[in-house]
Image 1 (cartoon, helix red, strand yellow):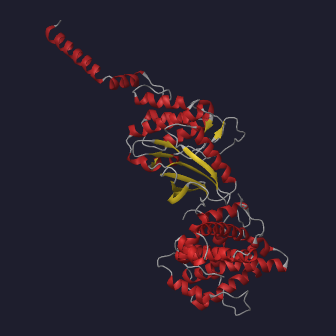
Image 2 (image 1 turned 120 degrees about the horizontal axis):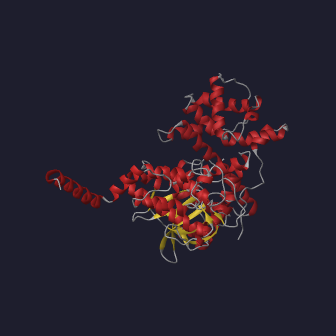
Image 3 (image 1 turned 45 degrees about the vertical axis):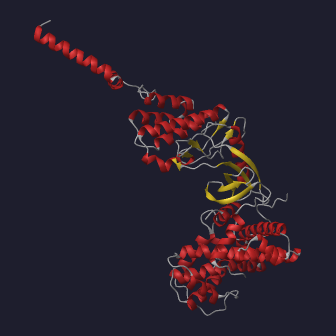
Length: 286
Length: 230
């Protein structure tokens, strides 16, 4: 039997793994990374002379359907928070592939520690907007988690990995996604993604009390959960604007405190005026 | 466009064969398993158990004999562990329980322990015994895949395709123009034949993996370990 040297073994592994793109306009440049379904390559589009990301399943079979589904979903959803797909096909060895815009950035789970509270919440709102857009087009993501969100160098927030997405009218249902982020009792509607978003929000500590309550409500049993991603996003937006969140009922003291912190200048003027009036009354008796 | 089957069905699981009651099937299964695993087992005995070259060579053969005599493969459960992880556990157990050089008639033969020893001496330092085991397994699977591909090429009159693969992927990776000159063919033929040979090698490697696994799930997992990004 042929005994291969380490370098020969490495070259052969590369040779049989690298996609045969000879019938396409793409040429592999390098390996960008590995995802749940396969390998993402940096490729050159030789017609348009631009770099693209080329995703290829690493083994033909059931994953092909998942990749094609992902490409179909991406093609359907044109949104700044979703990577546009350019092209799709099948390699001579049967593996499915698709080409998409090459995006670079940092995964949310890697970036979260260096982000301020405000940045984290604004990023979360952008994720909510993207997912709400998908829902409006009949698509459930079903695998939302920090690892599937990319933060670009210019503040782009991209929701990735739509391979488990479910289209409206699709017969596929049931429990999918990632343990710890997937709803324990799938409802096959928007509330499944609401649950995952709640868990995603909870994975970005430390959270102020109000936002912790929002995350808790998002991941609550279905009857008490936000009915839509728009509702969830609206609650986070309320907090950012200094308003009360629906997830945390507040008493008069807390409401007064929030009012004062929100209207500091006006409160200061009123307080100064009141103190002045009190002093005048004290010293003059009028 | 020709679509290659994801999971070739021409070969059957060597593990199932080695567990079979049929003597010929068992021999075939053991032959395949030993071809794939003797180098990993030898390297593991040398590196993890620090046995001498001679002792590790004898124990490697003892190990495969024990696999059959004690029917160890009957206890393997693919849903709980990969075969190569389980084999390492078996080696550990057998060595701890005093596996000795018995001097009895050894299974098979044809194991080139001298070359295996040579490779270990030339191996980069700092590699763990487990990592070496994995690499030896990958080396064996690709070696078997290459052998199957050569047989297929010979049967189909395509040895020139195989020669191109050897020249390029096992050789100096000369330019396609240089390969065309060396082989006396057009550059487009180099491109097409090399693509065919690589595709066929991929199929042959998957075919070998199919022999070395018990289920589609295990095959998928092993294929991703071998053919995924690394």
